[in-house]
Image (cartoon, rainbow, N blue to C red):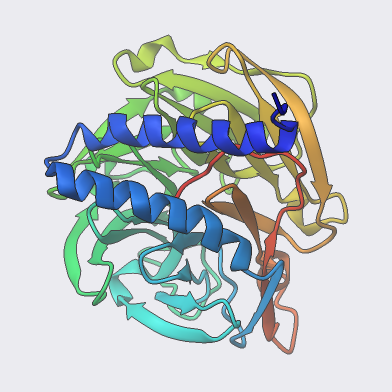
Length: 361
């Protein structure tokens, strides 16, 4: 009997694992058996199509300075935000940038997340100051979440998160979604994680003064959902990751890693929860890198699996498509250093890890 190769076995294992966890998620929304099988077919197509995405996509939009990136498998494109504007744009695989959503209520568009199940896109808005739309009334005091139709870009909901804790500094940063469509949004200037339900109703999910930071320092940053029912969140100021159970946020615990982090920013969790990609922006220094950790104990601990050096490009966030992961080169240090002329080109790059789990559609 012919022995199955390790490569083929891994190929099959990843797809079965991905379908299993997708099925768990599908169980939370209504669908017919025909829609379920059609979804499975789409999954296999998407996994293969992910190999067609170029290794490096360079797009031109002067002064854009994107912070967030999220892949959209439905329309075969990437969505990117803009710290310098309130615009969300699309980038196709050929590297063409097109403005998609402009909502001046965002001031600066930071993290974003495509929700393909519900066909919407969620965008965190803040005001870091020193940008064209900044004002004394909102600089360092703004946290909002805009929710838009994925196809048309039409607004669906808009939540003023900062209003839940008035009189505090605010900076809405990153977003993750649980299997019910609830969004969790980090506030980098206050020790808060917000929760916004699918109808746009906002509440404080977690708040702890132990995670307060000095003025201007980033605390909670990247965030990811694990299918076992907890969040992993980056605490940038201390270069640490924390695990927060959804059913008992007070039981927060530090993830013990076997490798140091340097300004951890965006996080990307695999569908089965066994692999976590951590983007280290390093403040735009040459030590910027993307780390892949694996865990066999639901992130009590994490072991470094692979590392990719990006260089001095200020990598911010990562997104997934099939078994491929992509990182955004944002160059945000140039924006805040007022480098002139403004940067013209930005990059979405496939992270060249040799082994990946399935990250998403």
